[in-house]
Length: 253
Image (cartoon, rainbow, N blue to C red):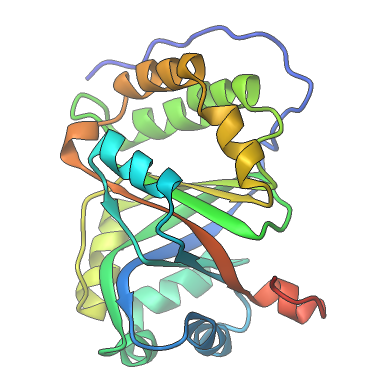
């Protein structure tokens, strides 16, 4: 296995946070029988210590273009759970009954990812974008995550300095995700991580990442470490539930 060669980049005016990370679990859903804010409330009651965000796809042109370009499956809903302690995430691993009963037949789960959430930007956002992918076969999980938090994050800083309110990399642990999926009796796909972007201005976001030159440089960067042909999951939608926003007394737009 070979490391990904590091690329030197210019200094930046808006550096990312590099040392903030919390345990994270993400459920990508293809369907949901309940109102999504209702499932968010139920998950928040189940895990009061965690921050719960639920986003719903708007099935818009940006999501369609992303799915077509990469050949990725489109999620209809995403449940994003962030814990203050890894012990709370481990409790889900070994005592999954409550979450399993909550999801039951109400949610069609595409996959689950869990691991370390590296929080590079951390402000509330009204909209959400997800890209979940598998690492290239020649890289170990450690090498892939090192590239992702390093060169890939550096490239985003350089090309899209004002692209988002929040940006989180979920560095997925396959063993943990596999155990959770088995214990919850839901589908599992061996994906190695997910980019989560929370933002307020879709036009601003996609004008940052949608130019031909930016798209070319991102594609070249991903080709060094991502197995695009293996498929992944993507979504662009609206945040319909945020337990932290509700706790602060604000409303989700």
